[in-house]
Amino acid sequence: MAERQRALRETAHAKINLALHVRERLPDGYHRIETLFAFCEDGDVLEAERAEGLRLTIDGPFAAGLSTGEDNLVMQAAARLRAERAPEAGALIRLTKNLPVASGIGGGSADAAATLRLLARLWAVPEDDPLLATIAGGLGADVPACLLSRTCRGEGKGDDLAPVEFGEIARRAVLLVNPGVAVPTGPVFAGWDGRDRGGLALADPPRLDAGWRNDLAAPARAAQPVIGDVLSALAGQPGARFVRMSGSGATCFALFDDFATRDAAADAIAGDNPDWWMLRSRLR
Image (cartoon, rainbow, N blue to C red; front, side, top):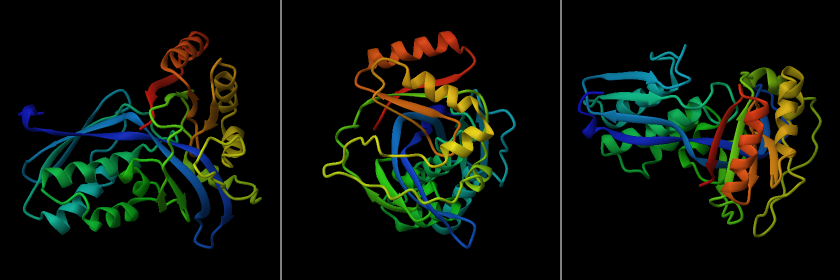
């Protein structure tokens, strides 16, 4: 990117769902859920600098096949913010795609949210401008949570948010593992069996709860049985405190008490499954 020293930078933090309870299917085709979002320090990376018009370039290990046109959520977020707050401005945006696509950890939603934060800085839009949340809500159910990128409870379609002070997981070591398969969200939700298994309970103060579920794990595993192998591999590692699939899959994760234990687990899993993608990170 030209004049890189002038470019601003923003991380599109990888999202995990500590719990994802599906309560009912709504008449509009969406599902009413209760979920607990948490975010990793790492993720995709966006950079932007002032330019004529809006342009997007994409690089990184998962850039192949991604559009740089108007159908990309990054460009949609940029265009909507520009139209409302900076019609004379422009930006050259660079997305470094470090996270696998259709993997249950935010992906395009996190990229769109990071674009809003990034261009708000570039174009001097106040970070508390309510338009940012309005645009996020119009781009997808997960985008508002990704805009916050902090631990929060989500209800409704996942976009009715309440921040959660969750000291037990702050800065905790986390390992994300994806077996290299994409799992589209729509078919997984469509595969939910329709059974309401109960709401999401949070202790006061919040603490990890073995009763938290991901109700999409069963249909995701039916679509891609290798997800079960990933969950078993993580659960079998010494020190794995909490193991779940994130979102609609296929990425799964485990929380650890320390980084050395997490790294030992990552090494062991990689030794047996060298083709699986991994991210060693910690929670925000």
